[in-house]
Image (cartoon, rainbow, N blue to C red; front, side):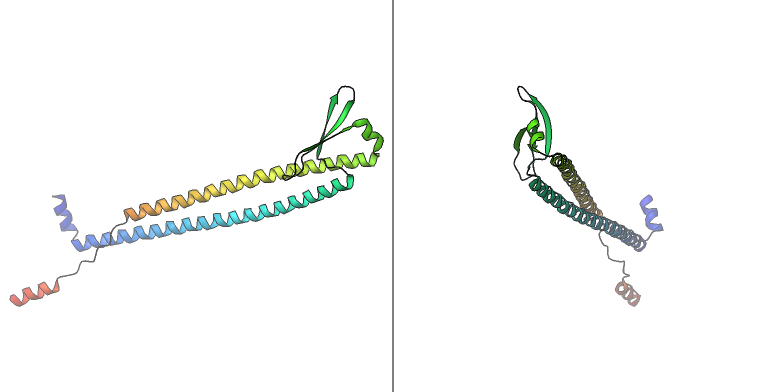
Length: 200
């Protein structure tokens, strides 16, 4: 009874017209959503490029600092980056110079008795040594921070980009599956009407 009343209230042509309007609205919504997702992908790619440029600048700055540290080490005659004081039997306090170097250099160790260092080196050289150690420690901190920041930012934005692309593909797939098939418009049967009139 309900289907009969619906058929009386909405002729086939009217129902098909409503279906076409609904399909067009769905296509418009899908197009707007796809445009929004594409814009998000473009923005994320631009942000990723910006981060890569900043990482390149930090890498160049790190290389410059490493080169300056190498020049200072050559001037002072030391190849050390940080020091620690340890106590040993029979020789008192010794200055243990730990060489860590850059990421490419190997770890070396140089032990110099503290009394011998004080006897052979001038106060200016001792001060320069401490300045060198402070600068190199700061450089190591910068390198560690740069490495952590680079890995973290690239991982975060890569995950965001991947998730956005997956969401866009999933939404597009669901939209295609739910898309209403196109139905041809209702055309009046003019030939049948003409034949009926001629017969009558």
